[in-house]
Image 1 (cartoon, rainbow, N blue to C red):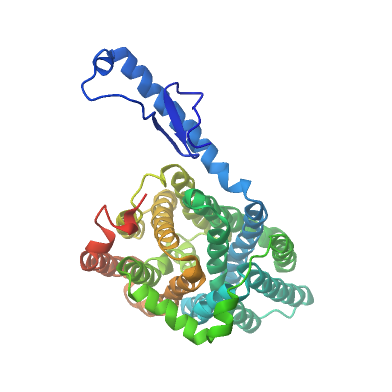
Image 2 (image 1 turned 60 degrees about the vertical axis):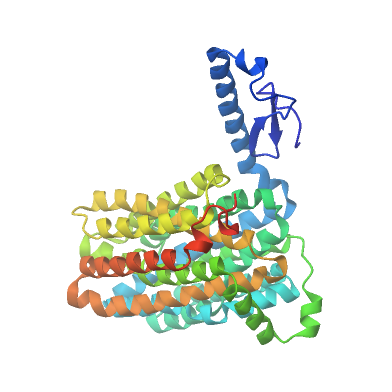
Length: 466
């Protein structure tokens, strides 16, 4: 409880669940009491403070689970994320093997993001009818599409054409899943637990990249496509059932009666445009999706097969290495999130992300590439979580769904980056393409930081509030 004595640190008081600080007593500057403190007493007090901070951090990591909705949403998001990663790896490898074309692989990856154009409309829908109901409808679509591919596979009629059609249909809905997740967390989570809640929520995606990559590759290799897709369909169905248990929130009835959805989207755009830190975050999100994510997601099957000459299992370990680093970054954020400056951290970690990719692209061996992917995964997780924290903290509740929808609209630059890379790699190779992308990314990241430095770099601005 705020103001309650911290049992681990006599003379200190606990503030919320995060930190301890000295009691505000009648101490006077230069008083004899202060002067009589011995060096050993100071060291003892410091040790007690460190102990209290450690205890507080452990408690705060689990604090979001005291909210009922979060206890159902977290495992639902986990099941969805695991299914996403298994599906992406399995179908990406299938397309590459069946077509033998890196261009077809990039086209498949691009189809999964065509729905970014309508992501703001999903945000408007969530603001109007409730984020929980919107999310349930989306996960029902995932279950139906996965079940369709499962049936085709068991029937022996599955072809790349079917995969491309399902990928396109899934791509309309899937990019907005993260919009609804974060908006639902923001609507139910107290402000003092938001950073921790986002860090823990991010572990659903990061752990999925570890488990989903290895499990997806292993299931197909040992059981075949049909049984693997039966597992994916079951995960989607489980996620739907758990999401239905989340207590629904009220939609914005006033907005639904007074404005059209298009006017709601325009209001969200105007809201972002008028706030420099939000506009800078949107542009940076667009940049990293165009020049960083393509090199480490949809192109990974090409890297595994053509650069390191490994098989589907080797691909699983490459993806799992990146995900393990991202998971470590998410867990680290639950510890340091209350002490960082979100906007500054966003810029610094994104720059480090680009530098890591340059090194990864020229790693001579498979083992060193896996090790470098762990580092890259950690810094990209810290960068993206810092961005999400800044956006959710500084956005009003009535605009949260729309602003997060606009944030996901930035993903539309990912298929553009993928398609351009698909043209460059056969001509100049993967290492040179990655270096070119990262040089452009670093230059534009610096430009964003300079242009909006008054909004995202100064310590005293809202974007850097702790």
